Length: 609
Ligand code: PEP
Ligand code: MG
Image (cartoon, rainbow, N blue to C red; front, top):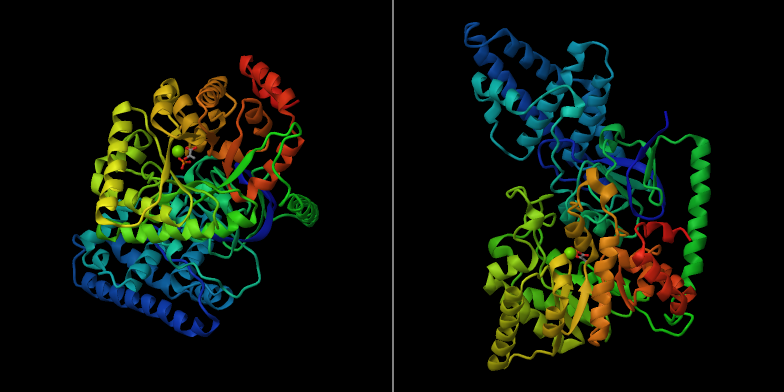
């Protein structure tokens, strides 16, 4: 039966493929494709995991048989019987082999996929007793995965522990109440399988670090249950230029492993098990989009000028140095935002990138841009970009208001100075600008600039080659707009981080799909802050850009031009579409129109014109 699931559109386009579900196990599970000649060895690995658990349960059965009913209740004996029966079930065993043999999934992924498939069957059962066997299935899956990791079978060590664990794991048969954890390691191991079927990833949630790793993967689209349009997971998905939908709430529960699904990234819709008529319609739409891309490609070398002759700079946002060639291919005139924190994610303590590693990475990006400027943003970890690769900083009540971005850097001056040194050194290889995220206080500005000067002076006195840097500030907190003249006195340029500026102006968590409808770039207060910043920068003769997602949103291009913006930094995939808008724009008409929009209580109505 065809089902439509509505979420939030993150990345445009349409993809049709088979669903790959992750995040179904409470254990962190690696997901990767094996080579065809590894199939037998992988089946063997799964078998050894199962055999270990069978042996443990049999041992426990024996122990229990020696105890009286008080020490070993009847339920426990029944549970052990059921577990052994499930471990022996041919459907389970053959299912796991199928995922390994036919889909080239690694053993752990195959096991969780089979769990998912069987759990659905249990859910559909009328009989409550049988329905609850899903919990047993989940338990044995967990135990096999633990055994494969070589973890001690603590849960099977004694009956008491066994019962406690069942409680602690919250093995409710109710799917809606089921606790889910993200698949933490899919990132580490995704490799190309040699299957031709397009694969679409469906997950409850993914961290930005996971998403980044998926950049090299085979997936042609993404769906997650949670997340907002400008969450960093969504931003990385968008940079991959493949259709993605976030905030699809129940998608990972409704979609089954291997279902055919369509992701309509434009409408933010996921269609599960499409009928032939729907499929034909989407095949047609897909062809239309291809034609549109072809038409845009012709603008690649067209200068980015408005009808009335204003030059508009179109820059790229990148996450890794390897993105630089893509930015060039897309026609970027430079990098307006290199999110350096992606070098740090998933790394801890001594494993954090040191000055040398950072220098090489920044240099790689600079050289990749072949003489065009690269704006490196100093590290912005925290909130939804936690260092340990988790989805969110769970340790603090309001991580988006906590130790994030420049606050984090200033809290660890040694680490910050080594980043600043690395950036200065990279500047010896081409034009580099540096910008600082999330500044709000004059004291932070002073501390930052003192450390910047300290880094430069150190290099100078050590005789280490370095280049000149323009230093800019991101404007992403309303307080910064209100003291924008202070910022302009201290910095060479400004860049509006509208993703955060909207979040902090409207008090809307940008990662929370439940308030995503209130995350409004057209809110009059947001527009007023943008207008004031752009006007102040222009008056003082200093460059100002927008590097938030708004810059790549073609419905906003004319308004931003009307507000006086002449520099946009966005995902490379959006550059040509924005250029098309620029080429059609006449700022002589847009400027008075923008004033009207600013004066309106309902500016969004103007976009409909
Ligand atoms: C922004 O906030 O708009 C921005 C560009 O920075 P980030 O999305 O990385 O927070
Ligand atoms: Mg930001």
